[in-house]
Amino acid sequence: MKVAVPQETFPGERRVALIPANVPQLQSAGLEVFVESGAGIAAGFPDDSYSEKGAHLVSDRDELFSAEVVAQVRTLGANAENGRADLARLHSDQIVIGMCDPLSEARSARDIAQTGASLFALELIPRIARAQSMDVMSSMATIAGYRAVLLAATELPKMFPMLITAAGTITPARVFVIGAGVAGLQAIATARRLGAVVQAYDVRTACRQEVESLGGKFVELALETAQSEDQGGYATAMGEDFYQKQRELLASVVAESDVVVTTAAIPGRQSPLLITAEAVHGMAPGGVIVDLAAERGGNCQLSQPDARVVEGGVTILGPTNLPSEMPYHASQMFSNNITKFLLNMVQDGQVRVNLDDEIIREALVTHEGDVVHLRVRELLGLESSESKHSESKHSEAQCQAPESKAQERPPAGRPESETRQAAESANENTAAVSNSTAAAEGDKP
Image 1 (spheres, helix red, strand yellow):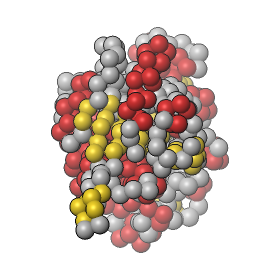
Image 2 (cartoon, rainbow, N blue to C red):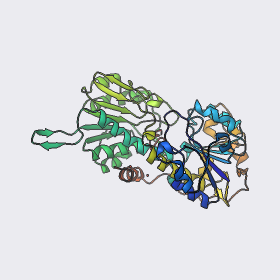
Image 3 (spheres, rainbow, N blue to C red):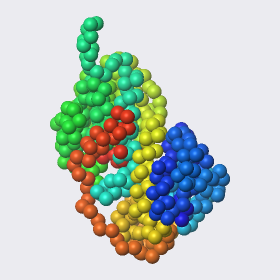
């Protein structure tokens, strides 16, 4: 079977879905890899590096999309405008794997379903132990948290570390991180390594241990948080009364901070407003806010997607695609994730859609001409009963191959220390960093 890796068409996207180092793994599983010419150049992977590993280079995009499997960073949904140009290239008995923002762009999933292609959304991979190596959301959130602190350090008119010099003592910068998911934990680790004094807050008080293990001080607010986390470990939406009180309590901590990094996002929902305009005005001039939730409305009232706003001397940044600003390691991590996901589907050199496998079933959005993911169907106003899954549960594709034996399902949930370990090891392995897209809090890539 052929696996195609197209060049990304989303504006400013520099990542590539598969790097040369992973090509031999797919070949060993019986798959042929075809890469669009120039697909990896922006990420630091020239065409020759793919050829050396045995991949075939293709310059014709129409020819490339004739492959049985298409691996992308952004499929239609996560690439709403330019992605439509590839819609006509999709066909039945084809598998498309990538990020597609299905809980916010459900209509795009319906459009793909009409082509007959089977769409897998990497954002929907379940948070179980067996799927950790496929967790794109956590991988991209790691990079976003790291990059956010670097942006803040560049904008801040102060140095991060404390220095004792002949010219006097320089006090350390005070950094406040809101949200202790993967992005938040990486932000804490990076700010601490730069020498800042770090405080962090999360609605899930169970995050205290991870925050403190990285050298941060956990901020406690007098709020009822019993229902703040779902079974997958993601933060859940709370009521407006809760957020109103939360904003009031957070304002005092924001006011005493030099840098605030916000990472609180709810998958498929509007980002909760945590920092009001009044709270921004309470910060000292020169302060910096980096809002990683800006794409979905933002945690800061004054943030704007992909814009630099200055209000009362405070700089507010709203980046929406930080992993693309560090494309080499972002592509490396994404490629490892998607390779593990793809290899999990391969049997006897064929990619099979085995709906008895929880990972495959939960990530599958469209199949056999229909939208099959229950949450996406509900968003589209379609039938949302379990019957949709049960009707097609044994209709595997080889995209249509015979049913395979279901893999044993491990206990659900991540080890408590996983996000902390990811923050520590990734920071070291990517020059100072290997989800959930989001990313224990649903951080978006």
